[in-house]
Length: 438
Image (cartoon, rainbow, N blue to C red; front, side):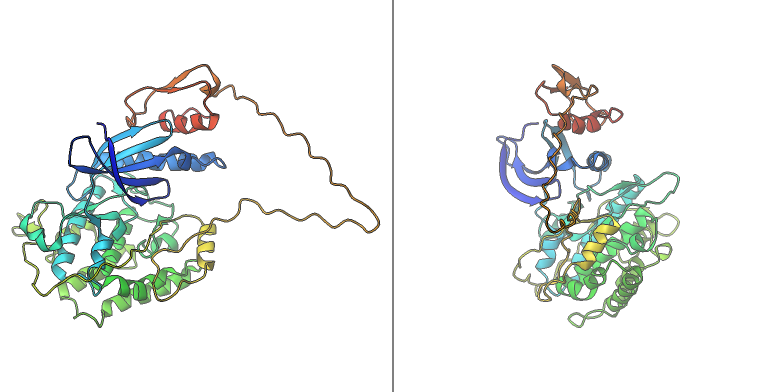
């Protein structure tokens, strides 16, 4: 496929830029995720480069495995020597923008219509042994207008997207250990325990999304998000998240109390102890979702079905406000320490992500002062060593070809010219031939 025309920029990520594009002479538009290989590669650490490349391969593999109307579809994968292109399904907007339309929280029929599809999408991912690990409103696409959702019950209302931080769920039931997620949405066991269940962590993130759907941005920023502002001390974070869960159960003064089935469902998702948290199969049998047909003996899971109830005429969306940019928090104790020491933002606009500044790579120590009466000249710098050409790197040979990978990132054979740079070949080596190392 050839995608000739780029229409506008949709957003930016850590390694990528997402633009809207369309094929020549075709009105249908797509989302094109452009991943720069120079951003993926870390010159200071080969291990980080391999980690980032494995994340991209895992994202492509997960989206190709997923075949569900509640998951963003991957149409095509292309690459050049400098970029990787993912052609994705494009939604009208994301769930964060939808919540902007309802400052006091979305109506219950909108919450049900959106959440039930997310439950089915997560069920599909977990059955395929994929944990998303970054579920938040910014990673959920919305298709159509909530006031017209009832007119086409077979259309995908919301779609889970951005599998950049997904992980494979081990077949033997082993737990995950790396810390990834977004503040306000990752499960508390990621900080409290050395290992965690990725599927159960996804369900806690779904509960946090429901909190923002039900109560709105202001309640979420004032009641829920402050628990994630102190991540350095685990005990303090545990007490803060328990207090936030208790306040969510008490509800908001700006809307009537939740219906008992919805309140029980939310309580089951926000269970701090992961072993007591609801599973995705239990969610599918919840009466509030209305996903099961028949009695207990002949119950069968319905295909994608949506709420047929019409919204009331008095519900009018509010004016769309400015969107706050989110950032995913990734993993180490040093990053958490810097995040905890960062100054608190202004209370007028509650943050959804704190900016994490990486620590400096090195600290220069000052030389001792010279003695009085002596003039000390700085020692001459040793000559810089001449770069040696590694004999294992074909980038310096007249011409070398690298076969395409098993993921079929490029059906063609990649040719590296003689003037190629060694680091570029390292990047392509880890994508195509993981056993070869420079």
